[in-house]
Amino acid sequence: MKLLAYIGSLLIATGALAQDARFSFKESYTLSSSPQVAISSSDGDIEVVNIEGPNTDVFFIVKKQNKVLSMNRAALEKELELTVEKTDNSLNIVVKYPNSHGIMDWKDRVTVSFRVQTPKGTTCDLRTSDGNISITGLSRDQKMRTSDGNIHIENIQGSVWASTSDGNIEAKHVGGAVELKTSDGDIKVNEVTAGATATTSDGNITITKAKGDVKAKTSDGDINFQDLDGALTASTSDGNIKGNIQRLTKELSAHTSDGNISISVPANLGLDLDIKGESIDVPLTNFSGRSDEKHVQGKSNGGGIHVNLSTSGNVRLVYN
Image 1: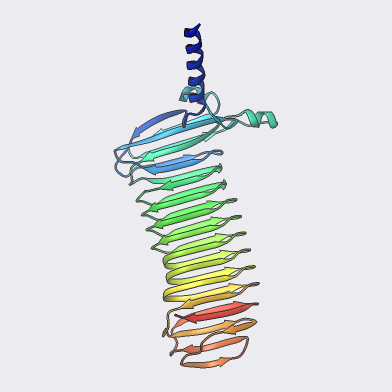
Image 2: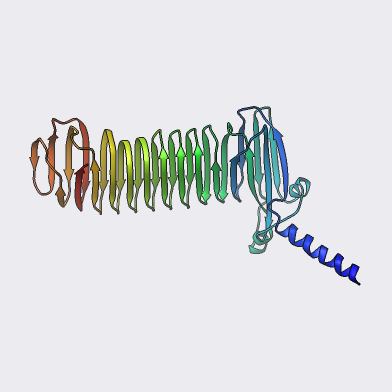
């Protein structure tokens, strides 16, 4: 009886471990020193991290009803169409789900998420329709797209292009140019060194410690920025624009249809001012031109960098 009880408890524990497994199966690929990895799926999350060594390890996380299944590749290929193409320097994985009809078919089908551990010099092209994407610690250019999910980008030395239709995007510590797009969600950018473009239709944009040309556009939301070094073009239809620029080297342009603008720039710059608002607070140092309560147009300190600010609300420009 004790032996049967022990076997029973062992089976229960084994089953629990199988249900709680972090992945279903793993495949390893040896690629060149600068590999290209592409993953395309219509459902599931994709996570990519760097790892020491020559191999690219792909963990297949197969779930049904939100539980990780214990299965191998052959069993997965009975559930859906899986294509894996490998060359000396590239790996391309494509997942296609069978057409489902009815609620029960959708609830009972499997989904596949991926965790990829790959060398630092990898270039990725990641696509999923319903899932999150996370990429960390790579040195080359990266591209990612999801239709319904969040995107997280961190410690990338190359350029980044990322797009989602419904989700938030966060990018921090990026050495190359950053282009981020979402239709419904917030965008956060922190510490980029080669310029950033952030576009959302419905959400807030926050940009901190960015160098180069910064472009931020939202239809319904606030735009906040700190410690910019370069140029700024910002526009929103319904929201405030606020922040400080440590070093202004090119144009400063900010427009909102319904909101306030408050921006600080370095003192003693030569500026060409064109500022419109319901109420304007702008120090006119060594100014030549025309000004009244709602419009300032002219040159400060002899002119130079173009500053164009307009809103139906209040405008405040501060020299720091």
